[in-house]
Amino acid sequence: MEVTQQAFNRDGNIHLGQHVLAEFFECDSNILNNIDKVEKYMVDAALECGATIVQKCFHMFNPHGVSGVVIISESHLAIHTWPELGYAAVDLFTCGDKCDPKVAYEFLKKKFNSGNALFTELKRGMLDEESHKVAQKTFEIV
Amino acid sequence: MEVTQQAFNRDGNIHLGQHVLAEFFECDSNILNNIDKVEKYMVDAALECGATIVQKCFHMFNPHGVSGVVIISESHLAIHTWPELGYAAVDLFTCGDKCDPKVAYEFLKKKFNSGNALFTELKRGMLDEESHKVAQKTFEIV
Image 1 (cartoon, each protein chain N blue to C red):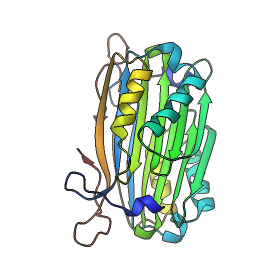
Image 2 (tube, rainbow over the protein chains, first blue to last red):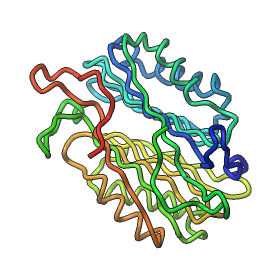
Image 3 (cartoon, one colour):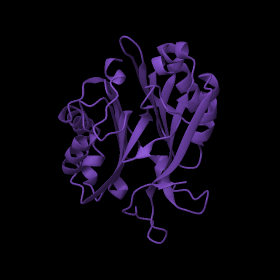
Image 4 (cartoon, chains in turn cyan, brown):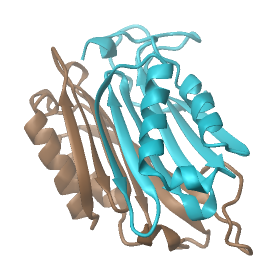
């Protein structure tokens, strides 16, 4: 897992990955209920933020809603949509310093025509600054 | 998406899903670097917590590390492993009140022979208690 050995310290701390938990509200329900569009936008979001796609799988639920994941060399992007609520829960998890998951967040916000969206960014896999071993603590909120 | 319309209020609040972010430390590196075992344990973890599996995809990195996702009717389970650090970052996201992601967490902790593990549980897709529309706010930490 070549990229994961590069802990990065964009903001002074050392950690393996950054995880954006995003909530998209007031989205276009027709988009959220269209598996082809959701898949295309998630793939494009990965590419937009500079990720390398290795696998993907998407599923359409009956009567509505799409779930899907794009596995990238740098971790994964995941989505679950509730078209009936105009809502999507999205996870954008990247490792290394090549990708910025917030670029994917901004891209998806536009593509879903989201009238309102929120995200929280977490640091995952905190590394001890001296030993560079993984520190046994939970994520930190940026 | 049949299950997602059932907001649940196990603890008095109404939300669509519960998302456990888990960090597994001091794991058996041979397990974390074995795609067949990682996939089997993730699938079994989904079944253990009562989920219905709809798709899965796993990827082995060169020289080491596994990433994978199990999409379930109730959302998804995702994993990224760093065998060289004995560390795995795992997401266990379930919707409805049928599954408890903490059951999957305990199961994986044993299967990975993790000497130390931590998790944080989030509520995602908060619903307004009166209108039952999705509330435009971020997750809450349980």
